[in-house]
Amino acid sequence: MTLGRRQFLTASAALAAASTIPNVFAQPSGAPPARYPADVWQVVDDRFKEFFLFNTPLQRHWSEGLWLEGPAWNAVGRYAVFSDIPRARQMRWDEATGEVSVLRYEVGHSNGNTFDHRGRLVACEHSPARVVRYEWDGSTTVLAESYQGKRLNAPNDLVALPSDGIIFTDPGYGAHVDYEGHKRPLELQPAVYYVDDSLDEPILLTRELYKPNGITLGPKGDTLYISDTAPSHHPDQPATITRWSLAPDGRKLDNKRQLASNPKEVYDGLTCDEQGNVWAAASGGEGIDGVAVFDPEGVLLGRILLPEVCANLCFVGADRNRLLMTASQSIYTLYTGAKGIA
Image (tube, rainbow, N blue to C red; front, top):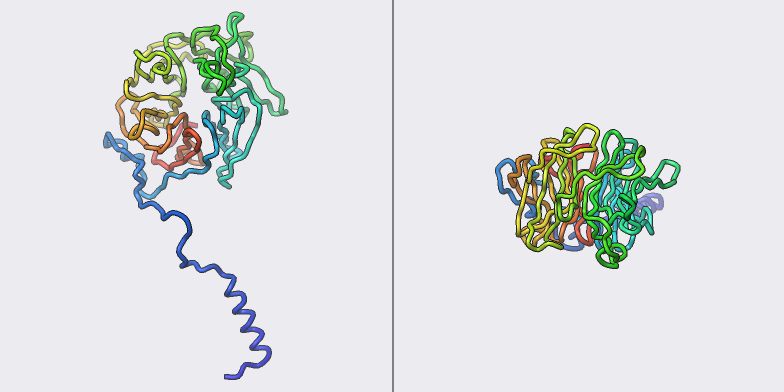
């Protein structure tokens, strides 16, 4: 068959265009995908099957941190803030693009973060030891830096109340070595405090824990959970999660009850789902590192196992059903059948 000039040019253009179309049947590059279901799920109690999703992978989004902590979700901006403590940076993970960038640097070895009910970021800093709030105009308000004339140890984690009050833990980890802060003697016994704009200094809530660390509210806002990483400095004491009743104004704890205790693992950051289950960052070696999930009475429901030690976690996304975990050098997400509290 003989092609005319116009037919020849048309055919040539079609061939050239076709050569630029990727071969969708080509062998994908990189490691082969893992089979479903992901082997990170560990069901201990059948009730945990409600949260297990067959067709979702564990995703590692970024792995360039030194020690990552304190994730907090901003629903309006669709991003999460987290801390790279040794580098004294607040980082930003964008849900839409998956990109991670530096939000702020030289932020006093920032650790725990949260957004208050007006959308302002509130953060715990190790050095200088203080709790700070970032205002809408870009300025910074120091909410707490001392108690009874003595410097705070190194505020660790926090929750925001509807009244704009803040409850924070102060175990002192950022003052123990020149890595997550600056080494210095602790001036105060580790404690948990309440603070708001009306106070000149925070209100002491409890000193009953050895190393009060992670903290979260229950779904109704009248229950407070706090982890105690006691074994780090008190080897004869177990790691625990303790539950308190919280007064309506946030200034008093009552009805203390130990929810979980285990000599073989340590619980760090905490978050709750809408059913009142507690999702705890856990460490203790292979088969434990990741997340442990307890029902409101302290029964272990199951685990999510990670290849790195998990320090903290929060639910993210429009449906709050995606668990974001800061784990050593990396951040991971996993879709679940649970919904985190807003």
